Image (tube, rainbow, N blue to C red):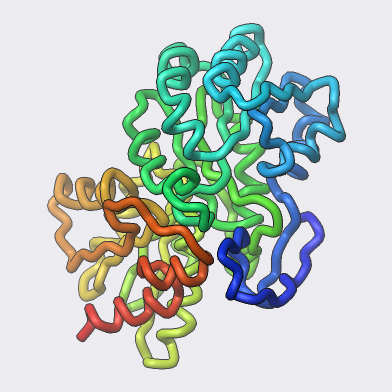
Length: 333
């Protein structure tokens, strides 16, 4: 584990707050960049590639350690994906970084035709997933999971915290084929180390059990769900949390087993639009299997989201700890 620091308190009056870490929360600096450097020492086929965003995706750490294996492609995401496919055809394993909006919206066809169709060993790590930036619809990738889930052969991952990311990097390198992973950058919260957690590709993990509510979540919403569980414990509401870091392929057996336990409200929480993400994937799996718990969804709306400070936006769109707690208590009556 990289060095853990306590996040310095910050004002919430700024128009744009990029960090998702709360005041005083434990964080790890650039876990993706450090994990990739460590792995590259053992895997000479790894190369790092980006579209003018090394510093903003933590790939600059790899560039400093392995300048001869780093490729700056400029502000040309389609070229980035095509070049990564070329490297993979020659036996390299490109780790490609950009913002999620630029990969999934601007370079989708290049990923589809040059990477996924040929089942190439390209790992695509994308920052600013969902509502993790305040810079409005141009930078908020609220629909990226829906787009990438629809791409044949693409593995899709949504990590929760620094530990998830550090363990995810070597796991995706072992996996043969293309991977799309959401990326948390900079000072990344550290929460899962308190729960004896280990990332396994394609596996959901019951991080915390609870008799009243089961929150099934991915990405930063697992962090939020754990905070909600602690908050609602004061009201004697027992909340379980099932973390689903791999969105595709979905661990349906674990999800069906946990959702099928009687007497619990099942809530899917995701940092993504209500359309095409984890909630709809789980809802479809439950219906196909004939498992019918009381089912609710916490997600971003099917809308172009506002710009502003992240704490304000998370409250506005219902994905802050307080908003989630109030919503779940309302559902329980």
